[in-house]
Image (cartoon, rainbow, N blue to C red; front, side, top):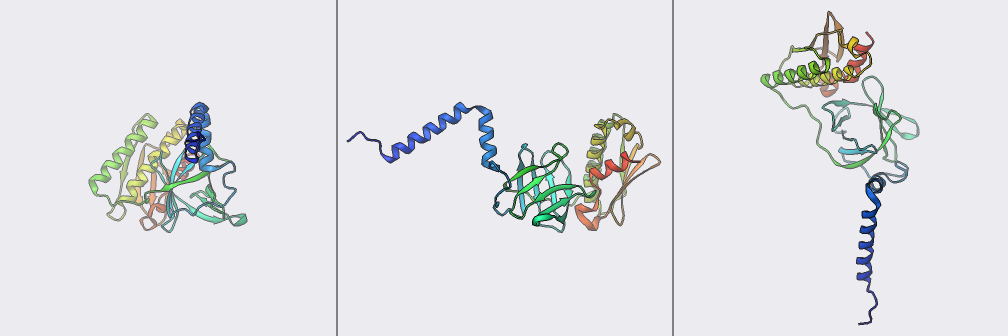
Length: 254
């Protein structure tokens, strides 16, 4: 034996030194290393790997979401919210695509190189999102009468807690519309929670005491005689009901 380090020993030593350096770097440095590993120092500047049709992404602020592009309208769901957003893709400069909600507001921007930017209330200027792997398809599951009643009760409870008074949820549903009406009830309860967090929330919520969900030709939301009527169009799938953003806008601007 010569006592000189072999290549394998050098590799092991280097690995140990790297592990020790990471341990002494502290949580902040570790998080920064993770962020750079996911996004790079210049997120979105280079060509990204092709994403699967249904994929999970993580934004720089840590918020995760699923983007499903397997249907007629792209669908997006944040993991910390029950709402599914139906998006409308629109061409943008430099070959980019902007995905907008039903108010025409940008939710995502995809570059021609594959980079993705997500826009939220907390980050209206947008933040980079990185591919985190495959995601679950976003679908409406069939639902029976009893399950629909339970979903309506859950939505009523969530909305009533936010408003600090009883808000009844009623529906005029058929087998063809039950699943979408159940989803619309959930989305409406999300809208009520959002209204309650506004500075003028008490005045906005005072306009209605009941939510009525019905079928129609196109999705809509309107308030009349203290009733918030939500119209759904079953033929359009998840795009066939108003988003929580639209419901809040209707109530706030009345």
